[in-house]
Length: 101
Image 1 (cartoon, rainbow, N blue to C red):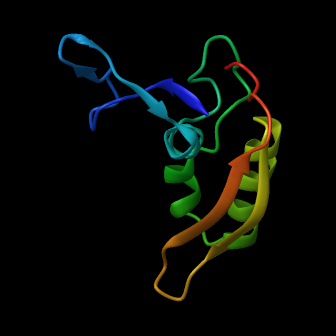
Image 2 (image 1 turned 90 degrees about the vertical axis):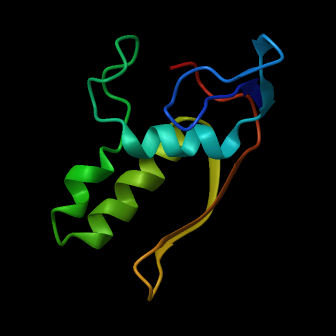
């Protein structure tokens, strides 16, 4: 999906004085993972809040919450797993326009 892009500080990215636009699929996934429920005024039930999950030992609960939030946003989730290295491996993509947040 094409959308406005954000920089490393999650602020609008500008290139040559204009908004940068490009493929934002991964950006949308990262924002869903990082934001807590209540962070989006327009959609207060959206967000995984991964920082809170990482303090818990409920890996299956985390994976279920990610899958639920991604699918609610319009992502088709093929696979989500926590690798042996502790990294989160996600294979998900938009098949249609995601729901507005």
